[in-house]
Structure formats: C-alpha cells, structure tokens
Image: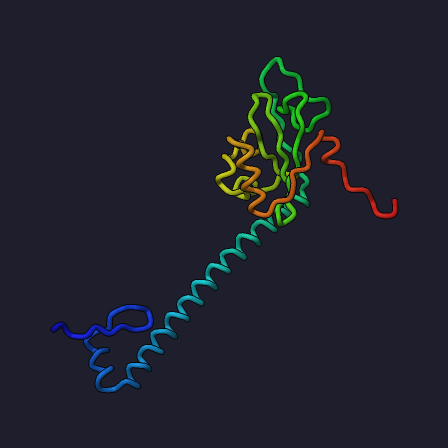
Length: 189
C-alpha cells in the first residue's frame, strides 16, 4: 500500500518535513503555510506596484512629449511626393493623394492623429501636432514609423482603426482636411 499523499491549498504535495509537521505539530504547519501565503501576497503586490509604476512612467513620458509639442507647435514635415501628381490644394500634407479624405482620431490622453492617404495609395497616421516621441506612441501593430514623412506607415488601415478603437481612441471623424481640422466653435458665439 502506497503512503497517503497530502497537499496544501495550492494543490502541491507536502514535503517530507511538512508531512511530519502535519502528524506532530499542525499549528506550526499552519503557521508555515500562512508565512508562505504572506510572502506570495507581498511578492504579488510588489509586482503590481512595479507594473503600475512603469505604466505611470509611460503616461508621464507621453504627457511630457505632448506638452512639449503643444509649446513648440512645430509644423508637420513636408514631402514633395512622386513627380506628376499635384498636391491637394492648400493641404498641409503635400504627399496627400488628390481627392482623398482624411480621418481624425483622438487618443485617450487627448493626442490627435490624422489618417492621410499618400500619393502612392498607402495610408499614414500623422500626429497633430508633430511631437517628440510620436514614433513610439501608437501600438507597434498599427504600423512602422516613416521618419521622412513624420508619420506611421499603416499596412492595413481597417485593422489599424479597429486596434486604435480597442485602445480607447475616439473617431474617426472623416472629411476634407479643412473641415476635420476646423477648431471647435466657441461657446456663446
């Protein structure tokens, strides 16, 4: 006949020492289990605190970058685009494909991003305004930074929009760039 197998609340088998304590001094065994649980809880709390600290640091970095961008109000980069295709009249993006709309998205932290169709037919997400660290602010699955344009090159705009919406982005607001970028009406005006 095999010896009985006893386990703790975690489903693990008792060690030889724990089985001896179970037979001879149950109170000491219970104190041992309570001490293990206290250590496990403290470790979990420390891990949660470290994760929260890292999250707060990322949010603080984003807030600093946005504030710096708001203070600078740096212009968007301009690209001449391929020869033979004229720019959209008065568009802030000379690379915009003529006759195409733009789509405005707003991140949970208030940052604004604009979907612009490039003359080559590809889709770009442009930060408004351009700010330091823009290339690290969107989830990597959205696309790759295009530093020449100061935009994120998007392979699949439909999947990118769905991902942004799952991340809490509002929008899109779609239309001509002149309409989408109009400042909101003043109250009482």
